[in-house]
Length: 261
Image (cartoon, rainbow, N blue to C red; front, side, top):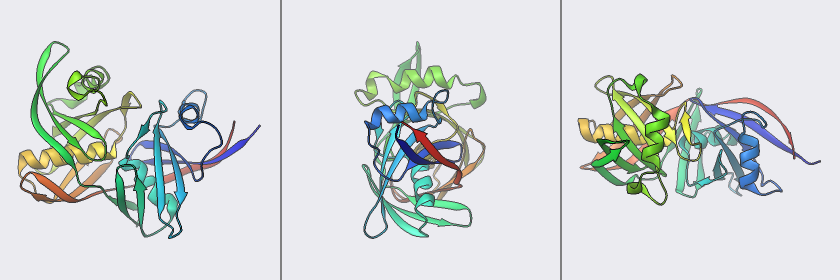
């Protein structure tokens, strides 16, 4: 029986299993086994890290269902803390991101958002709604609502996630409610987890940037997640595009162990 060393980490309620070298068995199947909350360790995703010659990191992220994602914001923040560099870079399938670690906070600079579309008409579960779309490393549909605590995130989120409008890749779905001049609260249905999660880094950025477009903010949006943490999304806005986008929040190591394969 083989053993795989791992580190369990969490950022804003998103939890991940970190392995710092390539496992010996099929990765999608391993991700499903490790992330299973009844028969495995339990997590939203599996992160594989390889340290490069200059101590930068290469990251691959696998969702709980075994599918591979191009990017994960909170996962990248965990990876940055795990890597131990005050300033570094992480190479993802979505591109290279800069990282900063210090004083219990982890900041990452995301790749430039793309594919922005506002107020897309959509028929969901017999109702006509309007959603917004942005790719912040992975695709996100953002829906502004009132009474966010009463939203059926699993049901409505699943319907939007698999909607023909976003096929074949599908989309993550963020429900956002405005709570102040620069503050929104969000709940996220994550593609690959196929359920609501306590937080989503790229979803926080997606919701924050769409809110900035609609409200006229041009520097900072605060985003409160289901897990209770208030993340900060910094950016520079040029008309209807964004650059220099950073996500900041907490991250920590929960425990380390060995998994028997």
